[in-house]
Image (cartoon, rainbow, N blue to C red; front, top):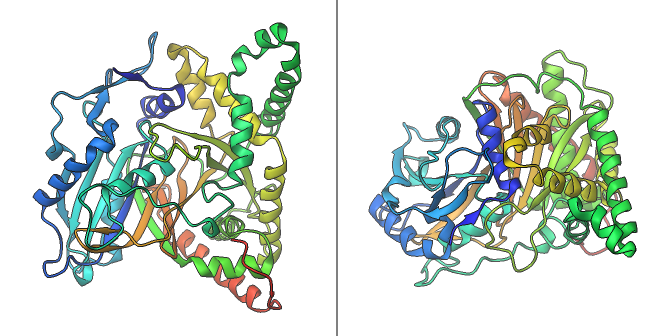
Length: 480
Protein backbone atom coordinates (compact mmCIF):
# COMPACT_ATOMS: atom_id res chain seq x y z
CA UNK A 1 0.00 0.00 0.00
CA UNK A 2 1.16 3.53 -0.73
CA UNK A 3 2.01 5.92 2.07
CA UNK A 4 1.11 9.59 1.82
CA UNK A 5 3.76 12.23 2.45
CA UNK A 6 3.44 14.08 5.71
CA UNK A 7 2.93 17.86 5.48
CA UNK A 8 6.47 18.38 6.82
CA UNK A 9 7.93 16.06 4.17
CA UNK A 10 5.91 17.86 1.49
CA UNK A 11 7.30 21.19 2.68
CA UNK A 12 10.67 20.40 1.10
CA UNK A 13 9.04 19.72 -2.27
CA UNK A 14 7.08 22.96 -2.04
CA UNK A 15 10.17 25.02 -1.26
CA UNK A 16 11.70 23.81 -4.53
CA UNK A 17 8.53 24.50 -6.48
CA UNK A 18 8.27 28.06 -5.19
CA UNK A 19 11.83 29.05 -6.18
CA UNK A 20 14.21 27.42 -8.65
CA UNK A 21 17.20 28.43 -6.49
CA UNK A 22 16.15 26.12 -3.63
CA UNK A 23 17.65 22.63 -3.85
CA UNK A 24 16.16 20.52 -1.07
CA UNK A 25 18.48 17.54 -1.12
CA UNK A 26 20.82 16.51 1.65
CA UNK A 27 24.00 14.54 1.04
CA UNK A 28 27.53 13.64 2.01
CA UNK A 29 30.98 12.85 0.66
CA UNK A 30 32.23 9.55 2.12
CA UNK A 31 35.97 9.15 1.51
CA UNK A 32 37.53 5.68 1.73
CA UNK A 33 41.03 4.28 1.84
CA UNK A 34 42.00 2.17 -1.19
CA UNK A 35 40.41 -1.24 -1.46
CA UNK A 36 43.22 -3.74 -0.73
CA UNK A 37 45.18 -4.54 -3.91
CA UNK A 38 42.92 -2.66 -6.33
CA UNK A 39 42.12 0.91 -5.35
CA UNK A 40 38.34 1.26 -5.76
CA UNK A 41 35.46 -1.16 -6.29
CA UNK A 42 33.95 -1.42 -9.75
CA UNK A 43 30.65 0.23 -10.60
CA UNK A 44 29.09 -3.20 -11.13
CA UNK A 45 30.21 -4.35 -7.67
CA UNK A 46 28.77 -1.26 -6.02
CA UNK A 47 25.44 -1.60 -7.79
CA UNK A 48 25.22 -5.28 -6.89
CA UNK A 49 26.02 -4.72 -3.22
CA UNK A 50 23.63 -1.82 -2.74
CA UNK A 51 20.81 -3.60 -4.55
CA UNK A 52 21.11 -6.61 -2.25
CA UNK A 53 20.79 -4.31 0.78
CA UNK A 54 17.98 -2.06 -0.43
CA UNK A 55 15.20 -4.39 0.82
CA UNK A 56 16.01 -3.03 4.28
CA UNK A 57 15.13 0.44 2.93
CA UNK A 58 12.01 -0.04 0.80
CA UNK A 59 11.46 3.72 0.43
CA UNK A 60 14.52 3.80 -1.83
CA UNK A 61 12.58 1.81 -4.45
CA UNK A 62 9.57 4.13 -4.30
CA UNK A 63 8.74 7.27 -6.27
CA UNK A 64 6.23 10.07 -5.83
CA UNK A 65 2.72 9.39 -7.12
CA UNK A 66 2.71 12.98 -8.40
CA UNK A 67 5.77 15.11 -9.08
CA UNK A 68 4.11 18.30 -7.80
CA UNK A 69 2.30 19.17 -4.59
CA UNK A 70 -0.89 21.20 -4.25
CA UNK A 71 -4.45 20.32 -5.10
CA UNK A 72 -6.64 18.47 -2.63
CA UNK A 73 -4.25 15.81 -1.34
CA UNK A 74 -0.56 15.14 -0.78
CA UNK A 75 1.51 12.95 -3.11
CA UNK A 76 2.10 9.41 -1.90
CA UNK A 77 5.03 7.01 -2.08
CA UNK A 78 4.45 4.15 -4.50
CA UNK A 79 6.68 1.34 -5.75
CA UNK A 80 8.48 2.30 -8.96
CA UNK A 81 7.70 -0.53 -11.40
CA UNK A 82 10.59 0.56 -13.61
CA UNK A 83 13.16 0.81 -10.81
CA UNK A 84 16.67 0.39 -12.19
CA UNK A 85 19.64 0.56 -9.84
CA UNK A 86 21.80 1.78 -12.73
CA UNK A 87 19.79 5.02 -12.86
CA UNK A 88 20.75 5.77 -9.24
CA UNK A 89 24.38 4.69 -9.04
CA UNK A 90 26.87 6.06 -11.54
CA UNK A 91 30.60 6.68 -11.92
CA UNK A 92 32.77 9.81 -12.12
CA UNK A 93 36.46 10.65 -11.76
CA UNK A 94 38.32 13.70 -10.47
CA UNK A 95 40.93 15.49 -12.57
CA UNK A 96 44.52 15.17 -11.35
CA UNK A 97 45.87 15.58 -8.76
CA UNK A 98 42.57 14.71 -7.05
CA UNK A 99 43.20 16.64 -3.85
CA UNK A 100 40.67 18.45 -1.66
CA UNK A 101 40.40 21.42 -4.01
CA UNK A 102 39.26 19.23 -6.90
CA UNK A 103 37.04 17.10 -4.66
CA UNK A 104 35.15 20.02 -3.11
CA UNK A 105 34.80 21.83 -6.44
CA UNK A 106 33.34 18.66 -7.95
CA UNK A 107 30.95 18.26 -5.00
CA UNK A 108 29.73 21.84 -5.30
CA UNK A 109 28.83 21.26 -8.94
CA UNK A 110 27.26 17.85 -8.20
CA UNK A 111 24.99 19.32 -5.54
CA UNK A 112 24.00 22.18 -7.86
CA UNK A 113 21.63 19.86 -9.76
CA UNK A 114 18.25 18.64 -8.60
CA UNK A 115 17.08 15.06 -8.47
CA UNK A 116 14.64 13.71 -11.07
CA UNK A 117 11.20 13.60 -9.42
CA UNK A 118 10.05 10.92 -11.82
CA UNK A 119 12.28 8.38 -10.07
CA UNK A 120 13.05 7.44 -6.45
CA UNK A 121 14.65 10.57 -5.03
CA UNK A 122 18.22 9.51 -4.35
CA UNK A 123 21.47 8.77 -6.11
CA UNK A 124 25.08 7.80 -5.37
CA UNK A 125 28.20 8.53 -7.39
CA UNK A 126 31.28 6.30 -7.19
CA UNK A 127 34.05 8.87 -7.45
CA UNK A 128 37.58 7.79 -8.35
CA UNK A 129 40.79 9.72 -8.88
CA UNK A 130 41.27 11.00 -5.33
CA UNK A 131 44.86 11.45 -4.20
CA UNK A 132 46.70 8.58 -2.50
CA UNK A 133 44.51 6.04 -4.29
CA UNK A 134 41.43 6.94 -2.26
CA UNK A 135 37.90 6.90 -3.62
CA UNK A 136 34.54 8.28 -2.47
CA UNK A 137 30.82 7.71 -2.45
CA UNK A 138 28.92 10.97 -2.96
CA UNK A 139 25.25 10.93 -2.06
CA UNK A 140 22.21 13.02 -2.86
CA UNK A 141 18.85 12.30 -1.18
CA UNK A 142 15.78 14.51 -1.24
CA UNK A 143 14.85 15.99 2.13
CA UNK A 144 11.24 14.86 1.63
CA UNK A 145 12.48 11.26 1.96
CA UNK A 146 14.56 11.55 5.10
CA UNK A 147 16.24 14.03 7.42
CA UNK A 148 19.94 14.21 8.31
CA UNK A 149 19.87 11.74 11.19
CA UNK A 150 17.73 9.31 9.20
CA UNK A 151 20.16 9.41 6.28
CA UNK A 152 23.09 8.65 8.58
CA UNK A 153 21.15 5.73 10.07
CA UNK A 154 20.32 4.45 6.58
CA UNK A 155 23.94 4.64 5.46
CA UNK A 156 24.89 2.16 8.17
CA UNK A 157 22.91 -0.52 6.35
CA UNK A 158 24.98 0.05 3.25
CA UNK A 159 28.33 -0.13 5.06
CA UNK A 160 30.08 -2.73 7.22
CA UNK A 161 31.44 -2.60 10.75
CA UNK A 162 34.50 -4.70 9.88
CA UNK A 163 36.83 -5.04 6.88
CA UNK A 164 35.58 -8.58 6.30
CA UNK A 165 32.04 -7.38 5.63
CA UNK A 166 28.85 -9.28 6.36
CA UNK A 167 26.40 -11.40 4.43
CA UNK A 168 23.57 -9.48 6.09
CA UNK A 169 23.39 -5.71 6.56
CA UNK A 170 24.73 -4.61 9.95
CA UNK A 171 22.51 -2.94 12.51
CA UNK A 172 23.15 0.80 12.81
CA UNK A 173 25.87 1.42 15.43
CA UNK A 174 24.76 3.90 18.06
CA UNK A 175 26.65 7.20 18.25
CA UNK A 176 28.82 7.50 21.33
CA UNK A 177 26.94 9.48 23.98
CA UNK A 178 30.00 11.53 24.74
CA UNK A 179 30.27 12.83 21.20
CA UNK A 180 27.57 15.45 21.50
CA UNK A 181 24.82 15.47 24.11
CA UNK A 182 23.09 13.13 26.47
CA UNK A 183 21.36 10.61 24.22
CA UNK A 184 23.72 11.49 21.37
CA UNK A 185 20.97 12.52 18.99
CA UNK A 186 20.15 16.22 19.15
CA UNK A 187 21.62 19.67 19.48
CA UNK A 188 19.96 19.92 22.89
CA UNK A 189 18.91 17.07 25.22
CA UNK A 190 16.68 14.75 23.22
CA UNK A 191 14.40 13.95 26.12
CA UNK A 192 13.45 17.61 26.49
CA UNK A 193 12.74 18.17 22.80
CA UNK A 194 10.94 14.86 22.29
CA UNK A 195 8.62 15.50 25.23
CA UNK A 196 7.73 18.99 24.05
CA UNK A 197 7.04 17.81 20.51
CA UNK A 198 4.79 15.02 21.73
CA UNK A 199 2.99 17.53 23.90
CA UNK A 200 2.43 19.73 20.86
CA UNK A 201 1.01 17.04 18.57
CA UNK A 202 -2.58 17.52 17.48
CA UNK A 203 -2.80 21.25 18.16
CA UNK A 204 -5.55 21.80 15.61
CA UNK A 205 -7.92 19.70 17.67
CA UNK A 206 -6.85 21.18 20.98
CA UNK A 207 -9.80 23.57 21.22
CA UNK A 208 -12.40 20.84 20.72
CA UNK A 209 -10.47 18.50 22.97
CA UNK A 210 -10.38 21.07 25.75
CA UNK A 211 -14.17 21.51 25.60
CA UNK A 212 -14.78 17.76 25.70
CA UNK A 213 -12.03 17.21 28.26
CA UNK A 214 -11.55 20.30 30.48
CA UNK A 215 -8.46 18.71 32.01
CA UNK A 216 -6.66 19.36 28.71
CA UNK A 217 -7.31 23.09 28.84
CA UNK A 218 -4.01 23.70 30.64
CA UNK A 219 -2.10 21.76 27.97
CA UNK A 220 -3.75 23.78 25.18
CA UNK A 221 -2.98 27.02 27.00
CA UNK A 222 0.66 26.00 27.41
CA UNK A 223 0.98 25.23 23.70
CA UNK A 224 -0.75 28.48 22.75
CA UNK A 225 1.54 30.50 25.01
CA UNK A 226 4.66 28.80 23.61
CA UNK A 227 3.48 29.48 20.04
CA UNK A 228 2.78 33.13 20.84
CA UNK A 229 6.23 33.57 22.39
CA UNK A 230 7.87 31.96 19.34
CA UNK A 231 5.99 34.22 16.92
CA UNK A 232 6.75 37.38 18.90
CA UNK A 233 10.44 36.55 19.28
CA UNK A 234 11.20 35.04 15.90
CA UNK A 235 8.66 36.50 13.47
CA UNK A 236 7.50 39.91 14.68
CA UNK A 237 11.10 40.67 15.72
CA UNK A 238 12.67 39.76 12.41
CA UNK A 239 16.13 38.32 11.87
CA UNK A 240 18.64 41.05 10.95
CA UNK A 241 19.34 41.96 7.33
CA UNK A 242 22.79 40.95 6.05
CA UNK A 243 24.44 40.00 2.78
CA UNK A 244 23.86 36.35 3.72
CA UNK A 245 20.18 36.79 2.87
CA UNK A 246 19.72 37.83 -0.72
CA UNK A 247 18.39 36.22 -3.90
CA UNK A 248 20.58 33.25 -4.81
CA UNK A 249 21.12 31.15 -7.92
CA UNK A 250 21.19 27.44 -8.63
CA UNK A 251 24.97 26.89 -8.44
CA UNK A 252 26.74 25.92 -5.22
CA UNK A 253 30.18 26.12 -3.63
CA UNK A 254 31.25 23.61 -1.00
CA UNK A 255 34.04 23.70 1.58
CA UNK A 256 34.84 21.80 4.75
CA UNK A 257 36.74 22.06 8.02
CA UNK A 258 37.97 18.93 9.82
CA UNK A 259 38.53 18.92 13.58
CA UNK A 260 39.42 16.13 16.05
CA UNK A 261 36.49 15.53 18.39
CA UNK A 262 38.93 15.53 21.31
CA UNK A 263 39.84 19.13 20.48
CA UNK A 264 36.23 20.22 20.90
CA UNK A 265 36.00 18.23 24.14
CA UNK A 266 39.16 19.80 25.52
CA UNK A 267 37.72 23.27 24.90
CA UNK A 268 34.37 22.58 26.53
CA UNK A 269 36.04 20.80 29.47
CA UNK A 270 38.23 23.84 30.11
CA UNK A 271 35.69 26.59 29.41
CA UNK A 272 32.48 24.87 30.51
CA UNK A 273 29.46 24.01 28.42
CA UNK A 274 29.13 21.32 25.78
CA UNK A 275 30.60 20.24 22.46
CA UNK A 276 27.64 21.90 20.77
CA UNK A 277 28.45 25.18 22.48
CA UNK A 278 31.90 24.97 20.89
CA UNK A 279 30.28 24.34 17.49
CA UNK A 280 28.03 27.40 17.86
CA UNK A 281 30.89 29.58 19.10
CA UNK A 282 33.33 28.75 16.29
CA UNK A 283 30.55 29.09 13.71
CA UNK A 284 29.79 32.53 15.19
CA UNK A 285 33.47 33.45 14.93
CA UNK A 286 33.62 32.35 11.30
CA UNK A 287 30.50 34.32 10.40
CA UNK A 288 31.86 37.40 12.19
CA UNK A 289 35.06 37.24 10.13
CA UNK A 290 33.05 36.82 6.92
CA UNK A 291 30.86 39.87 7.62
CA UNK A 292 33.82 42.03 8.65
CA UNK A 293 35.72 41.08 5.49
CA UNK A 294 32.72 42.35 3.51
CA UNK A 295 32.78 45.68 5.32
CA UNK A 296 29.57 44.91 7.23
CA UNK A 297 28.98 45.66 10.89
CA UNK A 298 27.93 42.39 12.56
CA UNK A 299 24.39 42.90 13.89
CA UNK A 300 24.32 43.66 17.61
CA UNK A 301 21.50 41.18 18.27
CA UNK A 302 23.49 38.49 16.47
CA UNK A 303 22.62 36.38 13.47
CA UNK A 304 19.72 34.00 13.96
CA UNK A 305 20.42 30.35 13.19
CA UNK A 306 17.77 27.74 12.52
CA UNK A 307 18.84 24.57 14.31
CA UNK A 308 16.99 21.41 13.22
CA UNK A 309 16.51 19.05 16.16
CA UNK A 310 15.97 15.31 15.84
CA UNK A 311 12.95 13.90 17.73
CA UNK A 312 13.26 10.23 16.82
CA UNK A 313 12.49 7.74 19.53
CA UNK A 314 14.86 4.88 20.30
CA UNK A 315 12.98 2.54 17.95
CA UNK A 316 12.96 4.94 15.00
CA UNK A 317 16.58 4.57 13.85
CA UNK A 318 15.58 3.50 10.35
CA UNK A 319 12.37 5.54 10.10
CA UNK A 320 12.14 7.39 6.81
CA UNK A 321 10.57 10.80 6.50
CA UNK A 322 11.36 13.77 8.69
CA UNK A 323 11.38 13.52 12.48
CA UNK A 324 12.55 17.02 13.30
CA UNK A 325 11.52 20.34 14.75
CA UNK A 326 13.50 23.58 14.80
CA UNK A 327 14.96 25.88 17.41
CA UNK A 328 16.28 29.38 16.71
CA UNK A 329 19.59 30.38 18.28
CA UNK A 330 21.18 33.83 18.19
CA UNK A 331 24.83 33.65 17.19
CA UNK A 332 26.87 36.39 18.93
CA UNK A 333 28.74 37.62 15.85
CA UNK A 334 29.05 41.20 17.17
CA UNK A 335 31.25 40.17 20.13
CA UNK A 336 34.98 40.61 19.34
CA UNK A 337 36.36 38.74 22.38
CA UNK A 338 36.41 34.95 21.77
CA UNK A 339 35.89 33.96 25.41
CA UNK A 340 32.89 36.27 25.82
CA UNK A 341 31.54 35.07 22.47
CA UNK A 342 31.84 31.50 23.71
CA UNK A 343 30.01 32.28 26.95
CA UNK A 344 27.25 34.07 25.04
CA UNK A 345 26.81 31.10 22.69
CA UNK A 346 26.67 28.71 25.64
CA UNK A 347 24.19 30.97 27.44
CA UNK A 348 21.95 31.08 24.37
CA UNK A 349 21.91 27.29 24.20
CA UNK A 350 21.11 27.06 27.91
CA UNK A 351 18.19 29.48 27.56
CA UNK A 352 16.77 27.40 24.72
CA UNK A 353 17.00 24.26 26.83
CA UNK A 354 14.93 25.85 29.59
CA UNK A 355 12.58 27.80 27.32
CA UNK A 356 9.47 26.91 25.34
CA UNK A 357 10.86 27.09 21.80
CA UNK A 358 10.70 23.34 21.29
CA UNK A 359 7.01 23.32 22.18
CA UNK A 360 6.32 26.46 20.14
CA UNK A 361 8.14 25.10 17.09
CA UNK A 362 6.30 21.79 17.29
CA UNK A 363 2.99 23.62 17.59
CA UNK A 364 3.78 25.84 14.60
CA UNK A 365 4.73 22.83 12.43
CA UNK A 366 1.61 20.96 13.55
CA UNK A 367 -0.59 23.96 12.71
CA UNK A 368 1.00 24.20 9.27
CA UNK A 369 0.26 20.52 8.74
CA UNK A 370 -3.46 21.17 9.02
CA UNK A 371 -3.50 23.62 6.12
CA UNK A 372 -4.94 21.98 2.97
CA UNK A 373 -2.34 21.05 0.35
CA UNK A 374 -3.50 23.79 -2.00
CA UNK A 375 -2.62 26.41 0.65
CA UNK A 376 0.27 24.68 2.35
CA UNK A 377 2.96 26.08 0.03
CA UNK A 378 2.39 29.56 1.44
CA UNK A 379 2.80 28.21 4.98
CA UNK A 380 5.90 26.24 3.96
CA UNK A 381 7.60 29.36 2.60
CA UNK A 382 6.83 31.24 5.81
CA UNK A 383 8.55 28.54 7.85
CA UNK A 384 11.78 29.11 5.87
CA UNK A 385 11.56 32.88 5.39
CA UNK A 386 14.50 35.21 5.97
CA UNK A 387 12.41 36.98 8.64
CA UNK A 388 12.76 33.84 10.75
CA UNK A 389 16.47 33.03 10.34
CA UNK A 390 19.68 33.99 8.55
CA UNK A 391 21.54 30.70 8.39
CA UNK A 392 20.99 26.98 9.09
CA UNK A 393 23.33 25.17 11.48
CA UNK A 394 22.67 21.45 11.81
CA UNK A 395 24.69 19.02 13.93
CA UNK A 396 24.34 15.26 13.43
CA UNK A 397 26.23 12.79 15.62
CA UNK A 398 27.55 9.86 13.67
CA UNK A 399 29.03 6.54 14.80
CA UNK A 400 32.23 6.59 16.81
CA UNK A 401 33.44 3.27 15.37
CA UNK A 402 35.05 2.84 11.93
CA UNK A 403 32.91 1.70 9.01
CA UNK A 404 34.00 -0.10 5.83
CA UNK A 405 32.98 -0.81 2.25
CA UNK A 406 34.58 -3.61 0.21
CA UNK A 407 37.19 -3.94 2.95
CA UNK A 408 38.23 -0.28 2.67
CA UNK A 409 37.98 1.92 5.74
CA UNK A 410 35.78 5.02 5.68
CA UNK A 411 38.06 7.84 6.79
CA UNK A 412 35.95 10.97 6.39
CA UNK A 413 32.35 12.14 5.98
CA UNK A 414 31.61 15.69 4.78
CA UNK A 415 27.89 16.51 5.18
CA UNK A 416 25.59 18.79 3.17
CA UNK A 417 22.66 20.90 4.41
CA UNK A 418 20.36 22.39 1.73
CA UNK A 419 19.79 26.10 1.09
CA UNK A 420 16.31 27.59 1.02
CA UNK A 421 15.58 30.61 -1.19
CA UNK A 422 17.37 33.81 -0.14
CA UNK A 423 19.68 31.90 2.22
CA UNK A 424 23.19 31.99 0.80
CA UNK A 425 25.00 29.88 3.40
CA UNK A 426 24.37 26.75 5.49
CA UNK A 427 26.50 24.73 7.93
CA UNK A 428 26.24 20.99 8.54
CA UNK A 429 28.36 19.40 11.27
CA UNK A 430 28.83 15.65 11.55
CA UNK A 431 31.01 13.54 13.85
CA UNK A 432 32.49 10.19 12.88
CA UNK A 433 35.12 7.93 14.46
CA UNK A 434 36.80 10.59 16.57
CA UNK A 435 36.57 13.41 14.03
CA UNK A 436 34.16 16.26 13.32
CA UNK A 437 33.60 17.78 9.87
CA UNK A 438 31.96 21.14 9.18
CA UNK A 439 30.33 21.02 5.74
CA UNK A 440 29.87 24.54 4.34
CA UNK A 441 27.29 24.87 1.55
CA UNK A 442 27.02 28.24 -0.18
CA UNK A 443 25.54 29.92 -3.22
CA UNK A 444 28.22 30.18 -5.91
CA UNK A 445 27.69 33.84 -6.75
CA UNK A 446 26.55 35.24 -3.39
CA UNK A 447 29.46 33.69 -1.45
CA UNK A 448 32.58 33.83 -3.65
CA UNK A 449 34.49 34.36 -0.39
CA UNK A 450 33.53 31.04 1.22
CA UNK A 451 37.21 30.50 2.02
CA UNK A 452 37.00 33.46 4.43
CA UNK A 453 34.27 31.71 6.41
CA UNK A 454 36.25 28.47 6.41
CA UNK A 455 39.37 30.23 7.65
CA UNK A 456 37.30 32.10 10.23
CA UNK A 457 36.05 28.84 11.71
CA UNK A 458 39.61 27.52 11.90
CA UNK A 459 40.98 30.69 13.52
CA UNK A 460 38.09 30.87 15.98
CA UNK A 461 38.79 27.28 16.97
CA UNK A 462 42.49 28.10 17.46
CA UNK A 463 41.57 31.04 19.71
CA UNK A 464 39.42 28.83 21.91
CA UNK A 465 42.15 26.18 22.05
CA UNK A 466 44.60 28.79 23.29
CA UNK A 467 42.13 30.00 25.92
CA UNK A 468 41.45 26.43 27.01
CA UNK A 469 45.19 25.78 27.43
CA UNK A 470 45.40 28.71 29.84
CA UNK A 471 42.73 27.30 32.15
CA UNK A 472 43.58 25.18 35.20
CA UNK A 473 43.22 21.44 34.57
CA UNK A 474 40.02 19.93 35.96
CA UNK A 475 40.26 16.58 37.74
CA UNK A 476 36.62 15.70 37.09
CA UNK A 477 35.47 13.07 34.54
CA UNK A 478 34.53 14.06 31.00
CA UNK A 479 30.70 14.19 30.94
CA UNK A 480 30.59 14.25 27.09
